[in-house]
Image (cartoon, rainbow over all chains, first blue to last red; front, side, top):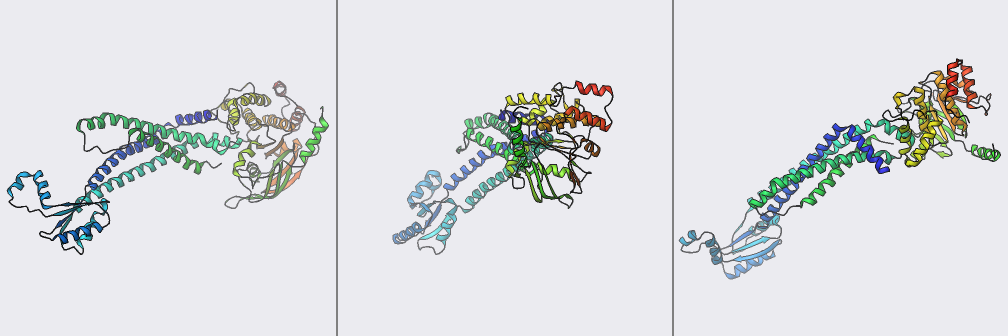
Length: 289
Length: 279
């Protein structure tokens, strides 16, 4: 009975103030679309970046002709460093064999082996790769010839993924604020349109929540409609564009992203929550009983 | 009346706790204008009280204080012994269900019929559909609108609209009915009809407070009069000349005579034809 009353009142209000409701709904729709597109995209880029990061290594080259004792000292020094995930010793011959695999002709021309012995360090945390290199460079052990890490490459990848995340988060935040403001405005107009009813309700002693529920439900309906439309559009987009691409070209390594069902549920929940917040903000300000 | 003595005894007992009590109530609005200044008064159960005074004297402040729409700055207001200033917000709706209020501008919902206007006020306090179906026709018969259930407010005369708003205020039979300028927008003849209706409600045992600036009407009705001026209590006297046993028809007839209106046959005829029930 009560639920029926609330829903009836909410729908009555929605149909009466169609224009502001539509505006609020469209904003929520856009917010949901942005989130729905960028969440998987960010996940994919972070996934790729993480893959690259895990490939980040430090190569430590050993001086030609270093004694076994010096090599052992260098190894011990590396092993003492924090953040060393794994350590691999690559001898001159192994290195040459690897290189010949990549480019047999070029190395066939060489009479001797120009490659040094080396240690390959995979850091536990890719972000700490520079620290490893720096600590080896200061006060280098006798056998150390050179330390190389792909500092610039890793820096670039790290800052790029960071930027993507930041921009998306900022964009989403802006849209969220716009959605909340527009829902709040819709509800405010709705309160204004129904001020006689509200006055009568207060007059005859309706409880605060009895007065508020229709407005909260109205706001949440706006959110639900926007969210549902967004999910539908995302589904269509996924079916028509992304899926065929993924099937035909097997893009990249296809990093794992959020499942569509979970994404849809999350978006709907977020839309309803955002509009509930919007309604709540207005009700607090304009519907003191 | 059978068993009358016992009921009278109970009524006398209840009369000990005034329905409304003001104790040194002061209300100053933001900006310094004084609404009420140290007003003390008591209104007992079943009384019919006029609150008079010029515009800005504090009548509406009293009404708003009684609904707890605003709070007093000093002093206490008690309704049936319940102190309003310490009443938690949550209990305000309950208070308002026990205080029926009628306004000069009716405050009806224009897009709902007479029936729905009254039913709506029951819906929003969570009454069951069944009890709404039972109560609404009853109260509309009491106020004499049983033939206009499905009319919209703008199809009714001012007097009829005020009857709807009285029906809405009284549908739950609150112990206290407050009318703020109930006849302010109405012509004298219609006003008498409204006063008669309010008097009938008073005769059912409901305490009635009528705020008005219509001095003539007040003097003729010979009920207790509380006069306010610039927020101060100027006069609180009981016009002792009326008998409590006066029926509503006698009451209306006397008013008409004393106000010198409604003597022509047409109006007399209409009054007798109206489906009013006299207690």
